Image 1 (spheres, rainbow, N blue to C red):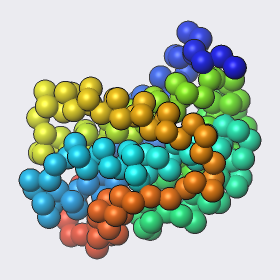
Image 2: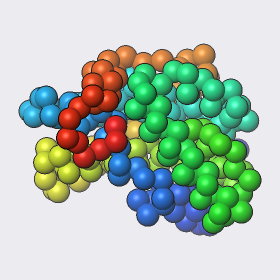
Image 3: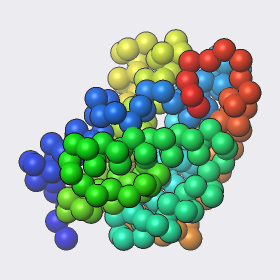
Image 4: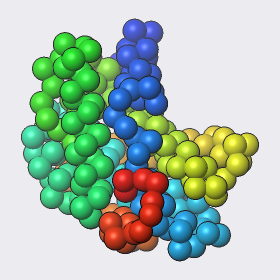
Length: 211
């Protein structure tokens, strides 16, 4: 199986995961807004490492892999059922709906209604993309969006944010390797702080982000 993206595939994947692609990723903080609101000195990098290794990053990698492998209906149902909060379910449902809607309208792809990581896995398989780089770039985009959220919450400056993204890139690759043989039975996590923050955010007062 090829492991490298062709130039055409790279451009499509870059477009799909670009901030310009209308999935509204900038609207979501994944609970980080509540966490920083209650602990302004939070170690954002350590928080994101845990989310990638033990929380949504790992689970999204497994869900994406399952969507790619032709198990999109089962992965979608499990991904919805295992969302740890109403806001996290909203996040993956709304981004998935926007992603699939744009695939249908701009790419002419008959994309089913799926949660976001499963939808991307399905689409990557349709375009015959190799899985490993799709997983890596997806996790990198997910992590970069959360770093950008921390910037907007005044927890990071521009230079520190870019240095953090550079370091966390290695964690994205680590998660891809660690989930290589994982299937839907391996879904689960232990990033309790992020899960609780997403629950608490539901009742937060004035806020910037939807999650």
